[in-house]
Image 1: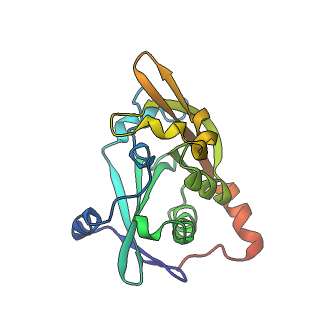
Image 2: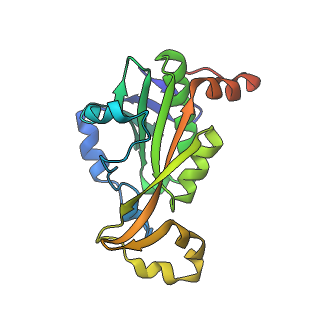
Image 3: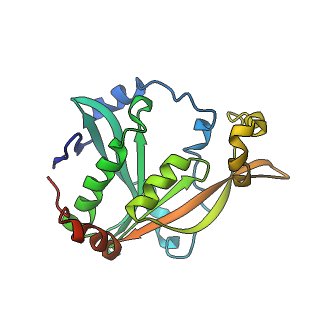
Length: 206
């Protein structure tokens, strides 16, 4: 399987890609330690209760741009019977903010809903990751609910005192176990994706 867009190519992830991804430069973002905090096993909105045992099974795809590996798209908590899974996406820092992630996800969601014929896709995203939340919202993902996760020792909470980050403070709170950060649970149904894609006549994949 290969999906081709104007600027990106999506193909199955290979073992060698792990080494390439290890060489991606770190993000110059004080909030980066929060982006991939683990989803608590106790958190569920009911629909996903039965999926907690599926967590070890993951399918992954590589995203290329100009012949370089720039990102990874993955599915976990895959339930073939119900036609649903959980989305994960990681992009190398030099390629963020150029619309490449949106292009790649558009290609992949066409494949997910049209070719694989899945019914629903879910994701969880750190609320302070404003760029990612905006991208998902533009693609049609709807907010469902929030959970709060331990921010961890790698995050320097002093950055929240900076005026530039004042709008993000509402996504943090303290409790007896320390600083917590809000994560959004979002989902997108096939019907909504097809409704958004059909008027433009671009509901196809390469």
